[in-house]
Amino acid sequence: MNSFFAVFLQYWPEWAPRLAEAAKVTAKLSSAGFVMALLLGAALVVMLRSGRPALRFAANFFIQFVRTVPLLALLLALYFALPPLGLTLPGFWAGVIGLGLHGAAYVAEILRGGLQSIHRGQREAALAVGLAPRQVFMHVVFPQALRVMLPPLLNTYVALLKDSSLCALIATDELMLTARAMSSEFFLPLHIFLLVGAFYFAIAFPLSMVSRALEKRLSRGRRVMGTT
Image (cartoon, rainbow, N blue to C red; front, side, top):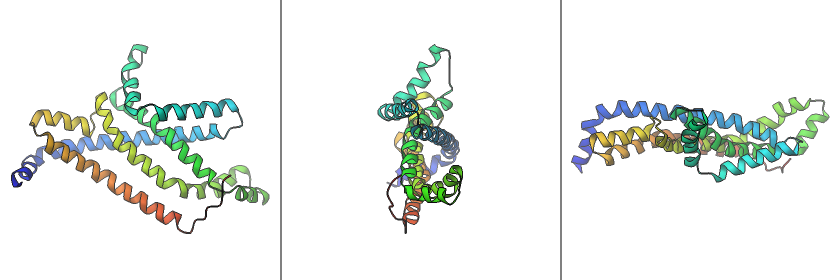
């Protein structure tokens, strides 16, 4: 057992900088994908709440399609299927777009659910006292909906962070691809992948704890008042 842990001490000065650099790529990859998911998810919610049936149909179709397609298939399609069409994406940006498209379907449902959690009466009361529809949304509906949306949004980011490991299959130099390269170089796959798991844990676990703490704190005293 001591010899097992001695390997970490022996190779730590050589492994740590490479894994730390790969962890930065993983963080950038998942963060950029999450930002794209937020923007696209918000656009989908606008389409879902639109009075035009065509926009609602397109948004619903996108959400259902993306949720039924495995993320790996989406990443491989972006990386390998686009070059014959004249569009070649680097692995990093193919990963960002794939994570963003995949996450947008879930973010849209979170945003829609958060907005629907605010009772219609609050909007009507705000309109009755003379607020414009935009003011009602910004000062009455959105601040309350944000309390509902924040914990699941943070959980979605954690899920994208873990799913970013699939980007190793499209030549993105994140943690998993770096670990595979190091395993071939040092012939110590168990030690290296355990260390990579510790890196993922160090990033994801605190975020999960923050999400749980937010959920408990924001739900304290909140009433379920129906839907819009």
